[in-house]
Image (cartoon, rainbow, N blue to C red; front, side, top):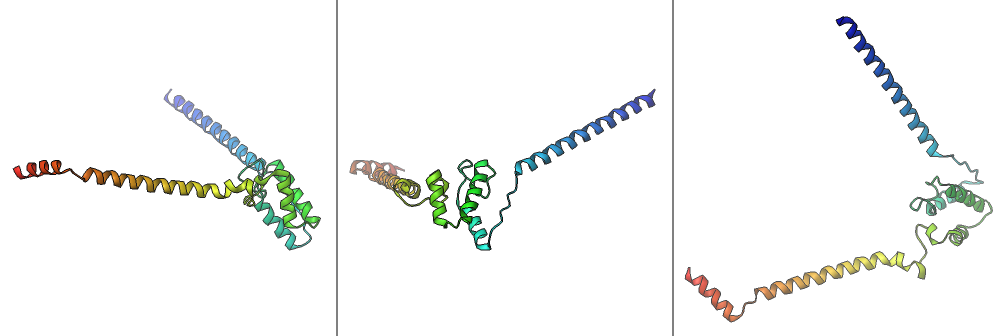
Amino acid sequence: MQLTMQANINNTALSLLRFLRLVLSVLLLSVLWSANAAAGPVETFKFKDEATKLRFQVLSKELRCPKCQNQNLADSNAKIAVDLRKNLYNLLQEGQTDQEIIDFMVYRYGDFVLYRPQLKKQTYILWFGPLAILLSFAVGVVFVLRRRTKIKDNELDLSSKEQANLDDILNKK
């Protein structure tokens, strides 16, 4: 009886281990499959020379994906980024200059498509906003520190009557 119970426990444990192995295998395969699916298609462009290829790489890193907000065209797998890379490739093949390509992208998608927007009225806040915030903070800190020292100075200045009372208290001991 004892042996049959032990055999049943061993069979149950073995079945449980097989089940866990199966579950882990399925999880591993699903993770690998989803990682492969997320990678997206790899684009291969044929360039007429190395200079054009280098320009493509530089421009695709300088231009921002309109959907991903903080990824450049080279790093984004969004459909719009794929389309913009194809547009960029076609514009380079047509012989357009870097500035013409940037102007086209800005005209089509706005200044947001640039990581370093051009300095103009509409982008002053982007260029000078952080500096204004930093200066405001520095002025605030100086103001608070000066006010604090004035309050401390006023607290230490005793009237002649208060000074006499303090002297009497100290002399009594």
